[in-house]
Length: 295
Image 1 (tube, helix red, strand yellow):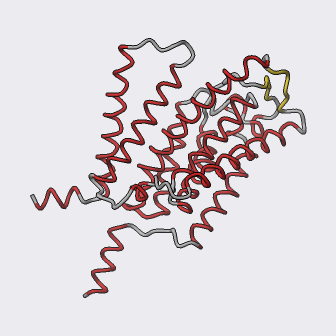
Image 2 (cartoon, rainbow, N blue to C red; image 1 turned 60 degrees about the horizontal axis):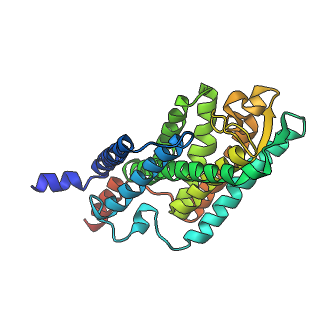
Image 3 (tube, rainbow, N blue to C red; image 1 turned 180 degrees about the vertical axis):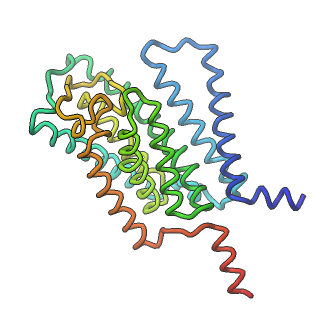
């Protein structure tokens, strides 16, 4: 029993348990789709919502077991400053992607060619809000809430940034029109930056809102592809010009402009995390140093 308790206390075991719990919950929740007919065009929303719910439930359960943390703050879900962090994340995520597309509009590489009928705007907004909110909650709960947070305990902050960002980039290789270059840009501009934002705030609110704001502005409002997937937007728009600057069919996440912006933001937030003392060494190393000090 002592061996089992010691094993269950290891961060690596927590990672395996929580990943397993996430996938089991996703599967069980998905079984409900066998008994309902999902309206056409809403399948992606429902699937993202299932993954988002599985991610949040996993974190809430993990706080009690196997991690036995004193509060949900330990899994990044503290309600303290949630509204403020969410508002800031939403603002910056939206304004940054609008800025990138604004720069691409100067040489005519991003062009607005029209817009949907005003009467269709509420339905488009509702669909986009639900789709991208569920997607952001799912990806941030999974990649930052589970993978980054637990890898940080195993290999430390720097190792967790690299590994979680690499996994995030690799996951986006499955998207339409993805290339090695687009995966690398996603890895840096989103994987590293979002991990750094989490390190600074130790909260999933800001990073989830930033992720949501970026995708909503890019796809639903400005009509540009989001990670290789074309979404109908309120504005009808086209991207043309050198692929290295526009990201081509993958969208501006594969653009050199976005990559440069991502590098700048990643460095800024990583330095801010360092100044705030939020760079952690591996948990096993901290325990070893503590034993040496006591001895």
